[in-house]
Amino acid sequence: MAADLPAPGPGQLLVTIHAAGICHTDLGFRDLDMPNAMPIVLGHEGAGTVAALGPGVTGFAVGDRVCLSYDSCGHCGACTGHAPQYCDELGLRNFAGVTPAMAPPMAFPDGTPLFGNFFGQSSFATHALSTVRNTVKIPDALPFHLAAPLGCGMQTGAGTVVNSLAGAPGKSLVVFGTGSVGLAAIMAAAALGMAPIVAVDRVQSRLALARALGATHGLTADEASLVSLAAISPGFDGSFDTTGVPGVIQLAIDCLGTRGTCALVGITPPGTLASFSPAGFLMGKKIIGVIEGDADPQIFVPWLAKQHLAGRFPHDRLVTTFPFDRINDAVDAMHQGEVVKPVLLMP
Image (cartoon, rainbow, N blue to C red):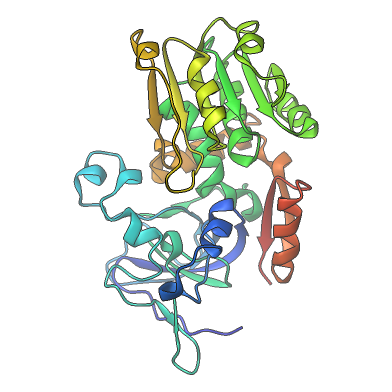
């Protein structure tokens, strides 16, 4: 289906998309009842080459190989405070379906508005407009289909361990949910020398993969309890919930040791509540919510690429590629648990 994409404006780049990862966030947004922002081009893990530069863009050249991540304004308190993932304009620039000027960014040939600008990119397309803040150069040695997932899923999982939980050798970690985000967390923890690293999931095959990627222990959801976790560590330094399930969050909190931190990245439906005893936090325990692994993509994506090329972050083991015209097959395979991280290859 054809659509008209305008020339890049100030601070923008036109990127020819070669690969784009599929994330549960794409599917969650697709299924929302948002008639005022439909139809929309989704996709927020794009990778490709720079095709054109907008006015005022420096630091990039046509032909540069790039990965796309989330967008931010660059001038609010969060952005100037080195926390662009909590930008004041995060919702507008990543989820609203419009440009910062509140206009649909694209149109069909007959002039009908087409929404996009999803995560400042909308990369389920052959071309995307990005900004200098969410566009990151990648090494020539990194294939596009492996660069694409670094912009969100891999960044969220690994960044939460590296940045939010301050992973370090000898620190203990339990990860609830071994989808692409949870497995990225496990790979990062292993690269940092953390131990023990416990993976918890409902599916045995995912636990086997988690162990192959660095987990020291694997527990099924039925096996996971305060008793079984305490047998591995009397109190974990960090726990990481990717599920958003209240009962799992409770266990992620309860298994912490003194000054332990529970990081939450799982999306819960509006109104979801989780209960805990305040007395359990008197020994310095913390719960934190995390967006995008507390990572600045300009810093963290190159770090991830370096780790992968050095053999310390083998996320290629998670990726399965599909032609762009098989996007629905890729989504079905992800839902069925047949693949961990589907990546679309553009024609």
